Amino acid sequence: MKKKNILIITLSFGMVIFSSCDKDKLSPIPQTFVADATAFDTPGRIANQVNSLYAALKSGAFFGGRAQIAGDIRGEDFINETTNLVTGADVWQLNCTGTSANFVKNMWAQAYYVINLCNVFIDGMAAKGASVVGAALAANYVGEARMIRALCYMKLLEHYARPFADGNGNKPGLPLRLVGIKESGFSALARSTVAQVYAQIIADLDFAETNLPVNYATAILNTTRGHRNTAIALKTRVYLVMQDYPKVITEGNKLAPQALPPYSATSGVANALQANIVNVFRSPYTTTESILSMPMSSTAGDNPGTQNQLGFYFAKSTGNGEFSLNPSGIIADAGWIAADSRRTFVATVSGKPYLNLKYNGPSPYIDFAPIIRYAEVLLNLAEALARTNAGVDVKALAIVNAVRKRSDPSTTLAPASQAALIAAILQERRIEFMGEGLRNIDHMRLLQTIPAKGSISAKAASESGYIWPISADEMSLNPLMTDN
Image 1 (cartoon, rainbow, N blue to C red):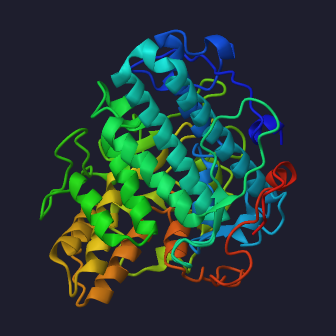
Image 2: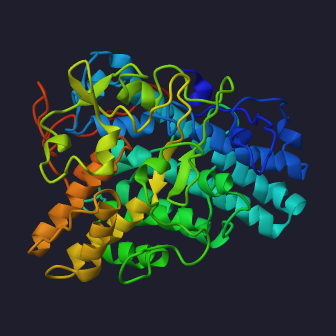
């Protein structure tokens, strides 16, 4: 792995043509380059640097595909078909024990690369950029950088640190890098605790909520750039992972204040469930349900690239079918009826079931990569309500039924107890977010055993391999780093 992808990064931002309506606005293809000394000299250069942060975030090695893929194939609903270590066979086997493993090294490298880009940008805005674009716009831009940094640390904690529930965050977390690195010699940094990293994530998202734009002028920007509701939505995920259910409720009620359906955000972007879930995953990918997604296009370099794409992994008729669906997994749930529109994403190809049509575009696989949807905000809120209030919480039940009935109008869930309601919400999450990267989060935040699948044995929270080792590159460059 190139050293620039670890921590030794020269400030050289790609200047990307800025557009308010074209999805190639986030293209990572550099057209010109700006030297460190002049990178913050003009509003245009600063705006293009913001675009470069998203371009790095949507790398196929990260939130352009592999971040979501890793979050799903560790769970029990997929079966590996190719035994290819490059495409995550060891991730699926729960056997990423080598610090040089493909997913282990590449995700760590790309995440810290993006973090450093954010840090360099934040530093530059403080030193010079704010005087160029003005305080208000500078705060918007820094809010985007801090939101992106928070996303990176969230994903790193998921795979490389013990869950928050194990010791209330007192276990070793990550090197918490908050200052930009432009040259070698600054890699030595010990791990902060899990709780300290989460505290920084919340601080970044709180700042983002206060300073991000309420909305943008176009649907594509409201889907692909951070706005106020994006920060709020991400906080519902973070607090759910931390099992801070009262705060999930506080944040969730900002976006779903209604007691009964239909639910929608009443300020900022009018985020809401779509009538047909299929439309969320079809062009133009810009429904108000998609709170944050990574845009792709057929332009060379503006899509995930070889062996990174969601469609390549999960589809068989248009992809490589790296992972089929486990016949004993969620698709075996008799309560998930055939008429449910989410079943249309599943198809049998060559005698095996695949998530064949959620990401159904052919090569170069330009389906937008989802990061967070309004449906998740609703189910995060529902679970927090269900766990906080005794009995069958009315709003929690109404929410889970709103999500279910959007795709299956004939079914009304009627759990008889608090435990049954929580179980129904967790099961609904498995169905709703299959292939979107949330299954591993749900296991780990609750310290659940990852169930057996195919030939792979179950993995308890106490066992080796429940989290990944630290990247070999970090171990070699950072003398203060300790492995898992």
